[in-house]
Image 1 (cartoon, rainbow, N blue to C red):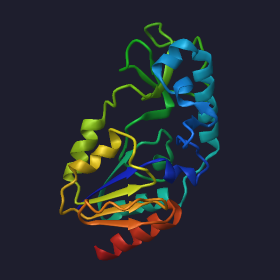
Image 2: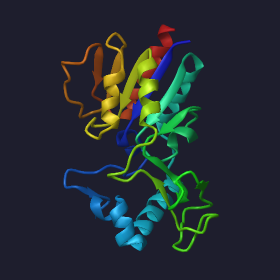
Image 3: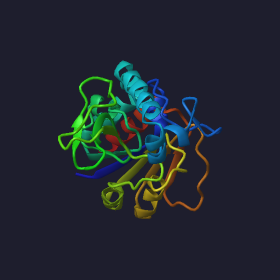
Amino acid sequence: MKKIAVLTGAGISAESGIKTFRDSNGLWEEYRVEDVATYEAWVRNPALVNEFYNQRRKQLYDAEPNAAHYALAELEKKFEVQIITQNVDDLHERGGSSHVLHLHGELKKVRSTIDPQLVYTLDGWELKLGDKCEKGSQLRPHIVWFGEAVPLIEVAAEISAEADIYIVIGTSLNVYPAAGLLNYVRDEVPKYLVDPNASPMPWMRNLKIIREKAGTGVPALVNELLARE
């Protein structure tokens, strides 16, 4: 069975109403990234950072997977599929995908501030200051903030290197180290980029650009791939 690796970014979740991306003004849902998405911000103003993620979590509970999420799950009928996502939502899982690697953490989970191995699924959308892990330290969002290491990037690189087909959806390919995963994909592997604002990449072999939103471009691509097998 052929292996398909799928790298997804904010564009696939945007059609579900999730505002998870940084815009051109350096703002993230009207907040400066430096004020809500760095460890320094957490130390400086934990109440603000915590409230920001509580609101994002609350928003996620009201969101639903879209046609792109459901289409990717359909690929599992004929392929071994591994999703690598930069998104912190759980829409891929709710859309039916079985194997999802979250590079930047998971919004519905929290972890210890002194032991990153202590990760918990939050009951509901609200984390409160004063909620502690079993070792007595404050819980924080289970998010890889700007400036922090991406623990699963090496696993993602291995998945990328082993892929027989590589699909990129809804990402600008400007956020590293995730954007560098394409460097691990073998030259001969067919590559697809689904994004309405995709830029030409003439240096990349075997790349087909589909300038459509994920909700229309991904189902069409999935149908094409399934029909070949």
